[in-house]
Length: 528
Image 1 (cartoon, rainbow, N blue to C red):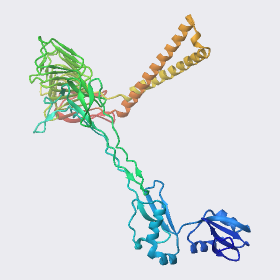
Image 2: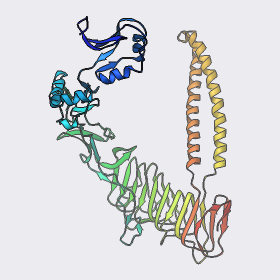
Image 3: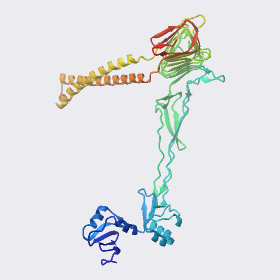
Image 4: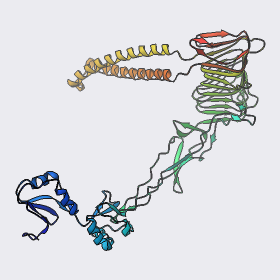
């Protein structure tokens, strides 16, 4: 003990080092004690925690009493993590002290944990796991368990693709094209997320559980309703119709079902929705619909006037005998058994058996590569035409034209639109300036011709903004076309006969002998 009645740790010619409460203090008698030599003192007294070396340097260079240099750590130090989910202990003692205290260290550790309120998740330490000066895991909390995420299930999205027969050939006239649902049919459901299980920290305090992630059911509220059934949120059809997925939202579109033929009994059909005809379309009659059209009759369509889907896909199970009259068109994809003397227009045109004497336009025109034939007519595709046979032994003129995208033309169009956009931005800026001046002069007070002029300026500004938005969209579409453009190709897998015209872009060749292969322009030369 020193004269102050505190615990004296070190006393020498230079200073007295002692502890008062939890503070380590130096009374400096004289200067000259090497700073580095102080390491030996801290090694002999592991409970000394130096707060800062500048404070220690000052204490050893300025004679005087009461220099605080740090803290006096407990013999068993308990360190709890910021989230209170882990507690460690450090035994601040020398090896000699450790050997002396070892028989009662487990008891001291437990008491220190109790003193700090650590009561949960205490590990069963053994003497062999103890060592001085290093953190030892003494307690671990129980992490909260996250609840299950919401589970969403929808009715299976109908896949418009041909049935593959056992012989491996695609059968384009066997498809489940339009899926009809009845009022009240199940369309999807959500099992809500669960709450999870709470955890507990080392102080025995509950840690709130983390609820599972929720998810949103995507559906059309005009045709689908959500109801709670047995703890689940269930989607059901508000009315009967065609199952649709619009922008990934499950919905029910209007669906007209004709159980027989479209003809004298029904008249020509015009319908806002999907149409399924289980018979055929009689000569001279038409089917026009905004949604998908499915003509299911095995005998196909003969001399119908037109079958057109303005926003959907089209399927004709039995094919078309057009008599140079029929127009078959879809904004989406087309699946058809055969096309005979008709006109076909769609995005992607898929034909099972043959195209004969027809005019066909699409992004791709695909006829079965093993047996499919294109004979006569003109086939135009933006990207690709494929078939097994082209033309015939009678050398019937058959024009296959893969147009491709002319990037230079699109670049020129983009540049022109960019100039127009720049001029519009300039004009809009001038109008905005004029309006700002008028607004500053209290535009609400304008009357008569002045008010009319102000309204005209506002309308002109809005028109400029609308046009700028449209131009910007068209520029982006053009850039996307250039970026995603695929080189045009024509593939005739089995035989292309003399009389067939192979045209890729501006390059064309009239075949004078039988050939086959993939035709394209390589280094500006058509490889025919």
